[in-house]
Length: 187
Length: 349
Image 1 (spheres, each protein chain N blue to C red):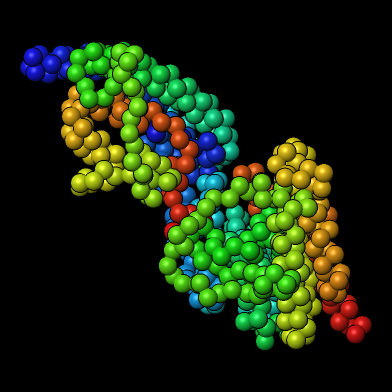
Image 2: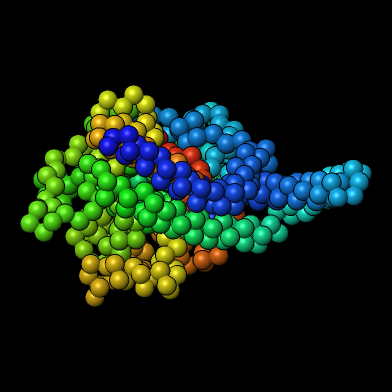
């Protein structure tokens, strides 16, 4: 969720430029005031105001920097996710697989079957079998579901995965969350 | 042993946390820009309402725009926020009523002006020359058009009635009882004898449970080929056009059927995609809907116009299949031409 919508509407372009201008103006002002004199803070504010203007007047000009920024963010998210998954695998999964987990994280001896019995899924799981709430979970959302699953399945070690999973969620670059659901449909 | 296990868990996760600090440090400013951009975007654009605030349940046609709207909505693809206004009956544009209009347009989201501001819609840009009243809402099929025509027929007297058929989904959706989770009127064959009937008995405010997603391009490809679906869709279309003709004859109005092509039927690359998806490639023809509907109209002595002859790819939006401002202008010119022809004939008559 760190990337912006790929096809921005006008208000997004203006807002993006506004945020960038204000941030860069203030950053320059604060840095100069710390290095030289506090009068430079005012200069930073002035610079921010000047920078904001082109985005407000001609938002279509912002399309290029917006696209570049999004490209950078997506690349960061891609590399960051890979790095996070690698840490999860080598630092958490591998050692725990060798220690104690009800999950089969390491290879079993050849003679042992890897057959896992499964039950019929409820009809609510047709769209996504992983999004169905766990029985007894008081609240919606994936975090309470995950914590309850870890407790019920005797995988308390999985609590340690939570910060990594939250960070992975932030590095998601899915598009369809940028606008509200149920647009164009009643339900 | 258990304590040792707990300690090792904590040590390993702390070590993992240390490793992810660079990602947090680098990612935080990026996330902050995203967060504040979304936050401030509310102040730089009009406030929009959800789709539920724009439409309401209607017992005869399933759903209908709410009366006296003056709101903004966000398009499905999120490419913009657009203004919509409706009259006291819930139909588009609050400046002219059906009685005062010379042209009445029936249709779906194209008639609604989906994806442009109401001031840029085809029914608004001709306000100085002629009055057009548009009766339609997103997702409507032809059956809903027929029901509305019969409900409003007393107001159609001596008017030019234009019926927009969007061959991208209307022909196929005439046969379906639902549009996503909405219940909508549809047509079904009577005992397989070639006759059709309109079904509305299932329309209730309750959600339609099975809302399977259809492959949009695959359905267009099927409609553009000699398939069982196409055969049924054109047969149902003939039944509905005949119904519309009878209603308009009774109302003493002139009916013109206007076929709206999907932009994929005009784009070389997309035509190749449709060809690949067509179940019967030998019979695939992107102009088949135009030809078939023209045949139906000729047989029934109804005037037909193919918008494919008047529109180009540049008249469509980039992210969804609707017209842009330029497209609406072109359509307005076409409608004005139709109206001039009609009024000349009226004078001669």
